[in-house]
Length: 96
Image (cartoon, rainbow, N blue to C red; front, side):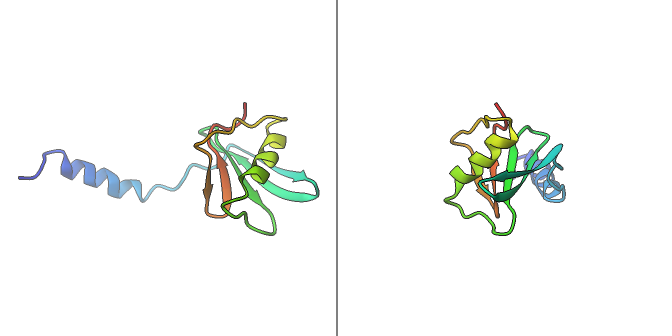
């Protein structure tokens, strides 16, 4: 017997794959120690940091945080939930 909520849940899940991520609400180029970064603040408040010229690796979170700190006027609110996504880092809690 199928659970009555299954078709609705499955349909919502299928539709969610069609929705693109929310666009950034603020962008800014940031330069730290001569390295250029593209930084964007998402509608959720999260800050996305991408290095221009050479993509980030998954172990370069500290470098991304330094760029986010500069974008956030000196203080990004980093947490254990920050994550590497594709070629960029997402500072989930955004600016402090």
